[in-house]
Image (cartoon, rainbow, N blue to C red; front, side):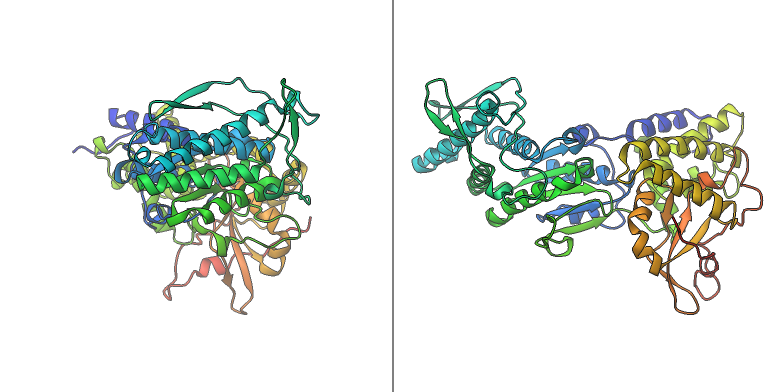
Length: 515
């Protein structure tokens, strides 16, 4: 095979595939049935267990890719049932509506999967009767909630009813909505004496002047795990929920959602139900204020898809494997990608991406386009640096939309890094004192999630045994359109000395915020 060049037809196909893959959504999981997930840490096996998982990673680290790979495995290797949710669709919604919409979608999927309960289940009359009763009770609860807006002072958003008729055993009929209405059940997103599992029922007035009680969330919860248990017992299938971009919903409603579905998983027999949550590092609130009921360690199996930058050679191999496997039909090898770069510019491209797969694909694609525009035969430093600065504009927009910290404080922190670290200390790497790290962790984590700084490793000690958290300052602070900034002491922190220690990293200057 001839050596890959920037101007080959295969390169054009690779760039098109990057544009397609860099913004994958969980809702399109089935579209990527040939997607090859590069899995050096066995994440697919871990997320495939029937445990409740929390998948952590910065934006673009591969959380959604992992979920898509897990869904593909479920589809091809098991008969289990999966339901996927993009939590961006729940942004700014009350916890009651989030829970009810999740539950409704899950129940509808179960009904669909059973082929309208028309087989083994109905050979047992009592079981058939039980399923019919549970289905009717849940439907009544949803209808009561939908009509509550016109019946009581607490308001509900009315959605159009789109009813699916369900024939059970050819005779009895149960109706399900496509969508359910938003609710303001008794309680609030703030912790109150009445939480999700203890929500007071309301009474509403029907046109017949009969008073009916709205089923509370606890009853719907009970109905759900009863259905799952019956379904699993008969069909020998498990139910798996995937919650992508969980950080998109308000943090103070996290405990309601997590506790609600954690309780269902405990009540379901034979591990027949579990849920998987994708979130940014340190973005989840597990407990209500003043409580310590749940913890990541005791109640979930965590998966961290981020990679440390201190092993840059391994990270380079990993990112090149991702890129070269996007188009398996082209038979592009990792070495083909390496050969496209002049000198150290591949390393600078990976550092510019902070080691993140999505940002690396974006920088590679943009660098190729800039190199072709400049009629270059290979990707130069100018091409990479210009692409890095373009990517910085995207980060700036994300900081306005997604930051949990006041935007002005983020701007001040960014300006301080530029002034004191890059322009002042003339460095791209700092050692953050661990004594200060604990105090500033919220700001530091936010800057990591926004990709302005990148964690090199958890900790490192100096010769005096003092502990530091080492950070790489994002390359966008350190370059111009053509070169590195004048006077910058570019720290090759990943290089080991003869004793296999990271001596360059230990020599980085000590610095911390004072704002």
